[in-house]
Image (cartoon, rainbow, N blue to C red; front, side, top):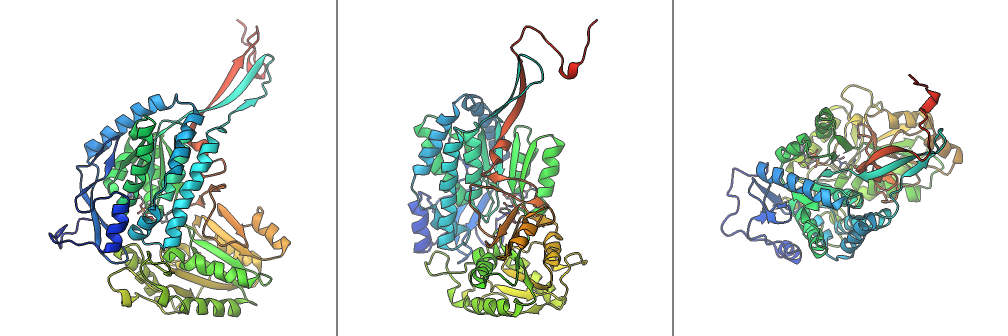
Length: 528
Ligand code: NAD
């Protein structure tokens, strides 16, 4: 919970920097008053207060009033009622509403940078992902096709029919405070569901700003606002949603630890669950790789977003012949970072802060463990003390003593959500693929080579076991067209493009008899 006991919540003379107040007021957020954090058709909130804190400056951006248990249950009831009418609205008409949301112009990217901490260009990129998936949702609304299946019985047809599912809850993580919801909403709305969003408790303002935009479009179309409901809150609100039988599907994005609990709870009530959990992503560089492409991609994958993407590059496997050259180039790039550490809202900043103090402590603990295990640290490391108000840290390259992720206590096998890149050297591609696959997580991986035989091996049955398997493209950053998600402890979920929409509907197999006889399948006879 973000109530801070040590100092008053809102000191009487609380002042916000000009940059912060400009971003908030441009999005209609009145930071001087507690901001209602529940939207069920009306804005309200009577639960605990969440503090939104800027990770770059430590300033308190606003206080958000989260959902009380009663408000959560009322919102769920209203969402169910709204769904009953909405499921009858033709899908292309639902797509038209998505098109109108897509047309809304608002600089949400600046708020993403302010509240989450990613740099301006990445904040803008995150908003672009919403635009892209809304485009996709518009098209999808005319393409959610079922199938006609050949029947073995004369005069019979079998149909596979998608229908709306009901109420879909989206529980999202802090690091993509708007895009992950966008991915879910576009598909869920096109499919005819009511969607209820429980964002991260540390990025409530992003969720409020986006919900305001969506709600205005729903109102214009005389649709109930609760079709895109918002309930801000901490883990108690999240777990109440997960437990609720009123929620047909929980789409959860977050850590493996919380995802495990969410999965158990939803499955125990036979609900549907879609999991997008932690990643621990590796890049492998072969001797024939174009290093002028591979090195900058690894640099972006490991340092970009301060290592706070689920797809961030955390492991780097280098062929022995090119390892010295790659490390030398990376060290030069890493050394160029400190002058560009700073306020993510400034155009020339390359590295913003970690999201909060807890993340800094996780980074520091990981560094300590690396050192205790005799890893070689190739770069400067630790807190970036020149900007003491924010959660800034230096990006690190570490070469652990042992490369085997299977060793007890190995740093290779856990996701440290910070800019720490671990490096090992290999001699054969088989060895690198084995290491790539030896961790619990299975989100993203990338191979750098020009050799078609290596590409075939990498993409084939004995290749990488992750959900995203790239060639000459880094681990980080994906387009919305393909289904996004990971295997193993990343949760097996798929969101965004591809066939991901099929999870947001309920499927029926319908056998229709057009004939004058009623034969049983498989030739079964049951005559008295
Ligand atoms: P988190 O697991 O701490 O929180 C995620 C969400 O779960 C938040 O909304 C939080 O309030 C809620 N929550 C916390 N405890 C809960 C409980 N007991 N019951 C129900 N809900 C609960 O994750 P985070 O720190 O916000 O995000 C970082 C993690 O998310 C990283 O592991 C990252 O890899 C992962 N992530 C994965 C993807 C993906 O697509 N695979 C995308 C983004 C982030």
